[in-house]
Amino acid sequence: CLSYFALAVPWLSPGALIATLLLLVTSLSLAVSDVVVDARVVEMARRDPANGANDLQSICWSSLALGGFLGSLLSGPAVRYLKPRGVFLLAAIGPGIIVVLSLLMRESRVRRSREGCLPTAKAQGQQLLRALMLPVVWKSALFIFLSTASSPSFGQVSFYYATDVLHFSPEFLGALSAVGYVLLMVGTLVYNSF
Image 1 (tube, rainbow, N blue to C red):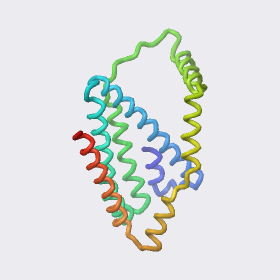
Image 2 (cartoon, helix red, strand yellow):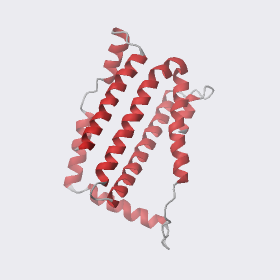
Image 3 (cartoon, rainbow, N blue to C red):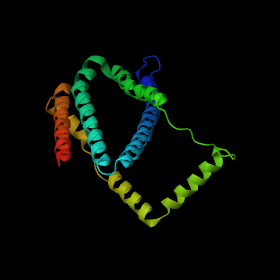
Image 4 (cartoon, rainbow, N blue to C red):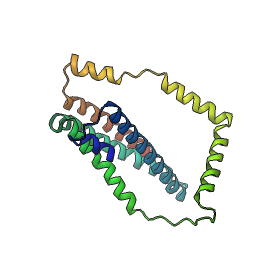
């Protein structure tokens, strides 16, 4: 939220290094919030073992499709009329809402141990390290990292070709992406019907 806001404010004008760090912090915060949401989905799915996981997965994928659809439709006009700084300001609204909603969540209090949180964090860190040392875990993680890091990505090349060679407008590219999200929603509905 703050990173997008810092990129949107004209008088801050961060350099390339600061902008990269701000985008890195944004990606990290999105990854953390994604893990928290996934954990909540697992908690809720365990309450209804028969249908909980399927229903929640359908809701998650439908929400992703709806958000992607709306974002795709709005991305072209947003870039054209709001310019990059306005898009960053608009992008700061979503994480800001998440921050507000997370402050409103009610959770049961956890009993504090007498030693404090540092020994608990240290023990959990050691458990995580032991888990990462298991061959089945580190080999899988290494494979996923290498397959992701070594796979070429043609997204930027395709975007350049679509905009500079084919002269597609941002609105048209947004509409194409929206079609993909509509198909994702249809796929989710088909999955949920079986």
